[in-house]
Amino acid sequence: MNVFLGTITAWIVALVAVGGLYGCPQWSVYQQRLVGEAELQRATYNRQVAVQEAAAKLAAAKDLAEAEVVRAGGVAQANKIIGDSLKNNEAYLRYLWITDLAGNNRSPSVIYVPTEAGIPILEAGKRP
Image (tube, rainbow, N blue to C red; front, side, top):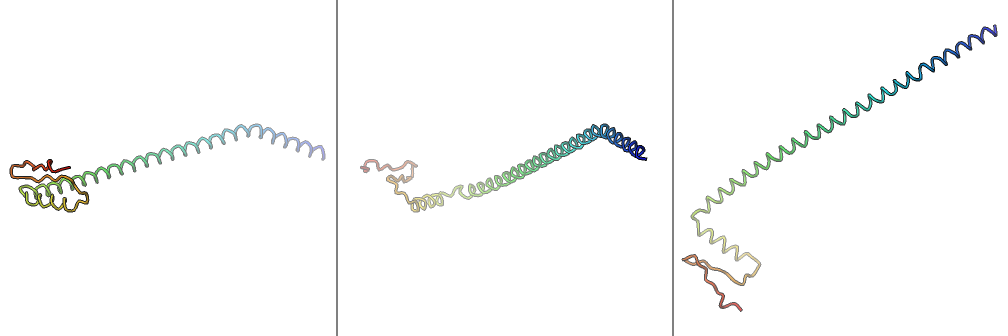
């Protein structure tokens, strides 16, 4: 009976050894396939993230460009309104010029006063 148990044990050990010799390379191939699939999934995910970030930047740039166009339209409209209100309104322009001179903290040494002919009166002879 001991011989029979020893033979069975030897056969079992031999089968485990043969199975290990066959299974190790198979396990290595299986493990490499899993690692490769994981790397592929990671690369695919990173590419999708990069594409979505680029799409978000593009949408933001389009929105900023559209906002700039709207702002420029508003500035153009404001300039037209101001320009139309200042046409043939010399008294108002003179008032703005005088208030700017009065409100200016700098003390100019020479002031040019417009005359009827549009030529300024120069006080050059009175300057030190």
